[in-house]
Image (tube, rainbow, N blue to C red):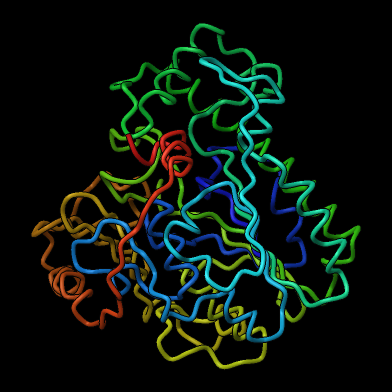
Length: 418
């Protein structure tokens, strides 16, 4: 079971409750995990192919469309005799052609009303989760005796931050007028919310609203886990993975939400948690990335990870088979108008933006405020970062992509297109 929560920051903005981690008390929690992209459209193709986004597309193609020639995660399971199903609230899995290999693909959004301010509970559930609960229940009831691969992608706490007022905890005391004003700004202009230099009160309110969305996402996760356990889908022999496609910004570097324009850690640090048979419990602090999950699954299934993978099995990490801190280079794609990406090695992070470079020591400067690129000690790493993409062969196959009217409306709602 692969459970992905859209736009979930690793730090969850200071929520101290045990939330998702409770399910992984006997599992592996990776506290320094990174997405390989700042938005879903790039993150999912890498996740399902095990390759860097830039190897899947032409040099300047903004949105990847995965070739039919690629072997994707669901196709791997299908070849192993598994029944494969995806339950998704975000259309990019299908629109990027990353859905290859799924026997069943359930689109689980169901708008039940139109609203200009916060929705009712019914409207909220319909937009965020739709029929996912019932569809998942039906699928597992009909396939419980078979080997199953299930991928779940839920949208809360993705923008617009629309948890109904009567379902809130952190933001319950936020003035109604302020809540509605912030909702309008993030719903009407999700690419770039019109909220520059927010006051402390406004910034706290936005964060509190996001925290409430994180709590609702946890409620749905717990509900889903209950279904899978009651139907004996999840047991001690199963593998459970929880992660996110990217994080979320709250004006730490004068930008909001996710996607372009920048690639700081608030938008690429994510949770990664794994539990199941032969997974050694613990909190692991070395750098890992989403690209590691496909190789980890293949390794867990008893096969050798494929040579072309750009990630490495986390089972090697857990078993202390490699010196991860000094050997690994983590890559994350920033997209946008200019070539922008980040390389992380140990505590040092290099951001390449066109011909410019930024360097941060994450141990001393976790908020990435002090650019030390002028220090000659990092000249070699900067050059290594600038040449990073040139080392990898591109394996794309150019295709056109047609969006339906429903696709366009859904993407507008989520802020992906104007």
